[in-house]
Image 1 (cartoon, rainbow, N blue to C red):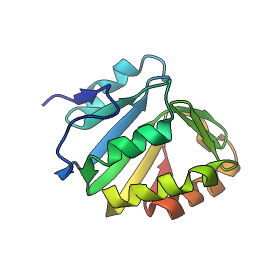
Image 2 (image 1 turned 90 degrees about the horizontal axis):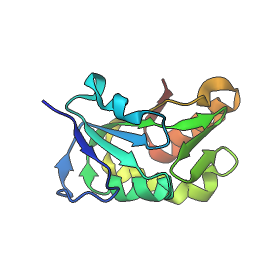
Image 3 (image 1 turned 180 degrees about the horizontal axis):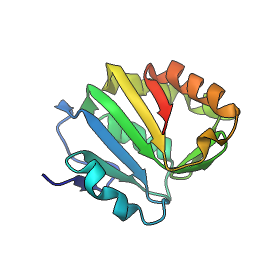
Image 4 (image 1 turned 180 degrees about the vertical axis):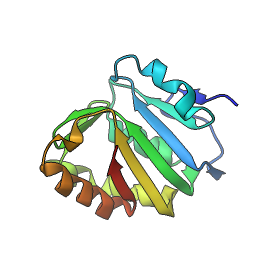
Length: 145
């Protein structure tokens, strides 16, 4: 089985397609191509454009699916913030994107999980508030791995 990789943030797939786990990689991750190897083999993988608003890209991407059990975000960031495309999301501006992020619920299963890795998000105490707000908005369990 091979990884399904898309660099197009608006893939042409059936809107009722059910995929258990979606891996979203920000192209700003150095050598991200190597991440597409074995750990993600067989999973739906999409690459975010670093020149475009990442939240908008995610909204477009997620609208193509239903019942996702997991979204694995691999992105850059720092203490208390993540970078998705041109969007630098932190506790300070999370509410500016609240409506868009809240819409993710429509595409997630009831027991969905959002994993965030590849960044230093957890390097501060602010992460607890940030993750709690993401949990509240999405209805998913959010973990920094």
